[in-house]
Structures are given as C-alpha cells and as structure tokens.
Length: 317
Image (tube, rainbow, N blue to C red):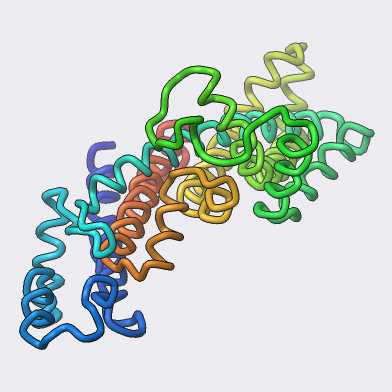
C-alpha cells in the first residue's frame, strides 16, 4: 500500500507542474498588460520600469516561472495588482467559504443521490424508480445560475424567508456558526447540490441494479439472508464506483462554483475568480486557479487510495 501511495504521489507531481505552467502562462496569453490596473496611461517610462521590476516582470519568462514556483511552494503567491494585498491571504479566506459551501452542497446532494439511487435500483420499474430518474434528469439539466435566480425570486423576493446575497448581515466574508449566517448558506447550497445529486442518483441506480442482478446476490437470498444484510453486501461492492464519481463531483463543486457564488455574491473562490477576471488581476487569477487545481489533484489521489482500501481487487500498479 505504501508503494502504491508513493507511486500515485510521483504521478501527481508532473501533473501539478503542468498545471502550474498553464497558470503562469496566463500572463502571456492574456491580452494587454496586466499592470494597466496600477500604471496610469501617462506614466513616465522610469515609473513603468520600476513597477515592472517590483512585480518581477522585467526578467525572462523562464526565470519568472522558476521564482514563482519557488515562492508558491513557500506559500507566497505574490501581491494582488488591484488591491496590493497578499494573494494567499485573500485566497485563504475565500477558500474557506467555498469549502463550507461545497461541503453543505455535498451533504445534501450526495445524501439525496445515494438514497434516491438505491431506492430506484431496489424498486426498478416502479413509481419510485421513475420519480428518482425524473429528479436526476432534472438535476443535471437545469443550469445552476438559472435555478439560483428562481430560488432568489421565490424564497427571497416573494416569500422573504431567506436572504439572497452575501454570507452575513454585516457584509463580511468571515463565517460564524449561528442562524444569522446559516440562513445565507441555504439557497446557494441547495442550488449547487442539484447537479451532483442527479449524477450520483444515476450512478448509484445503475451500479446497484447491476449488482442486484449478480449471481452472488441470488446466492445470498437462497441462503436466507435478510434485506439489510444483502443491502450491506451490495453497498460494499458499489462503493468503489460510486466513490470515484463522488470524488470528481466534489472537485467540480470546488472549481465550478463561480456562477453560483456570483449569483448569490457568496465570498468564495468563484466570486473572487470572477472579480479577478474583470479587474485583470493576473497574480490573483493565477493563485486561485493553482490552488483549486492542486485541490483537484490531491482529491483524485485520495480517491485512488480509498478505492484501493475498499476494493482489494483493484490492481495496485
């Protein structure tokens, strides 16, 4: 197992370096000069040169990339062009909010998807199966941003039950565990949970239905095992496949929440990424993409390891 984990970590290193190279290349790929936000149009040449030197943009690209990777490994992602604050500090605060939103959406979406998918597989062809399938298709078909706007109109504007924007009444991005802040989490979490719930429902239904038709399940029934015992055996065999899909969906929740966070003005990485794009804040944009990509790489590594622990039949190579 340790050799397997070590190999997976070695495989993740070149992927991480490739992602870092793509993130850094945004400086050259983006049109215009990223320092236009801090350099006046009529600035003298010596002022422009001094600012470029301060941001390290006067050196060759390869040297800049090496220095950027070295600083990133030490937790330094540079300074924001728009605000002048350390990029890592802004990302750390936003990432905590995104993780909170993603975990809440995961609990709702994955829990609902597992229950609906399991019921649909055990009652294949009945009304429960049709209802679960309809919910799953609706979940993967409805756009996040549209659903968010509908929920805001219904529950915030018309019924006035829940707030529609921000993470707290004081407008700050710092989270506190009280109802005054929890109510701001409800609508964005429900909005984000629909797509993963639909995908997990369909995956669980297909996987469990296939296992229920396997010969060993018939043998278990012939031996007189009850429904609960059979369900445990089915869940154990379905876990590796379902876990793989759930791991990917959690990664997508972390990286794909930009539209939902923008609709609800939730102060997470998606909202910060949208702000960085419009402000042409390249250091902040690079930092956000790099951190989210590294989370995705680490999540895939974790899923690989857990899958192997749950199913010894998976070849550790």
